[in-house]
Amino acid sequence: MSRHGGLSVVKVGGSLSAVPGALDAVGATLAAAGRRHRIVVVPGGGPFADAVREFERRDRLSPDAAHWMAILGMDQYAHVLAERIAGAVLVEEPGSIGVAVGAAGIAVLAPSRWMRAADVLEHSWAATSDSVAAFVAGALDAERLVLIKPADGGSGTELVDSCFASVLPSGLPYAIIGWEQAGELERMLEGA
Image 1 (cartoon, rainbow, N blue to C red):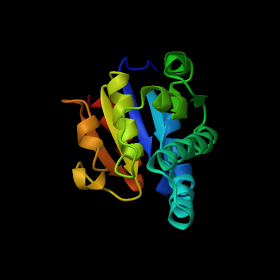
Image 2 (image 1 turned 135 degrees about the vertical axis):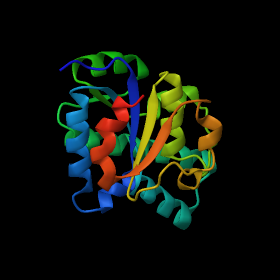
Image 3 (image 1 turned 90 degrees about the vertical axis):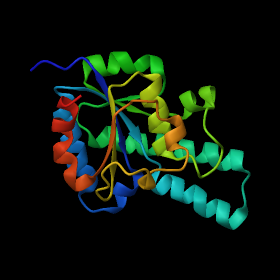
């Protein structure tokens, strides 16, 4: 089987960790797709970002501190995903992505170092992992962006954070799918 040349960015929502069986199903689907496609997985924040939200609610944080703590939460979820996606390689720098997807097909990005260096997003809860994924897709000149969420969403912008549209590169195709539709990922990756 030959890999297709283009790179796809797939964001795996952190909320999937609360749905029994969802992470394993999505992980297996991504592992299979990674045998034929070059994929960079961007993690959501999930329970790690939720812990930041709860801490902020109780003890107050500056917008800067909350932003960077939530981005670090994405790094934690990246470790979970790298463990759940057979053959995936955890990467922390954009320069490591090419080697990882060339060798294994799938790179799981722990984005904090890159996002700290680029510092392109608003430091508020208006910019979530959806916007991080849009930024990464644009920076990597990806062919497509797929957001996997707990429920099916089509492509409506009401399902993404309010900064997403301003970060998403013009003309980049994207789709939002529920984890139950992850089996359609292969077809989506073929389509661009």
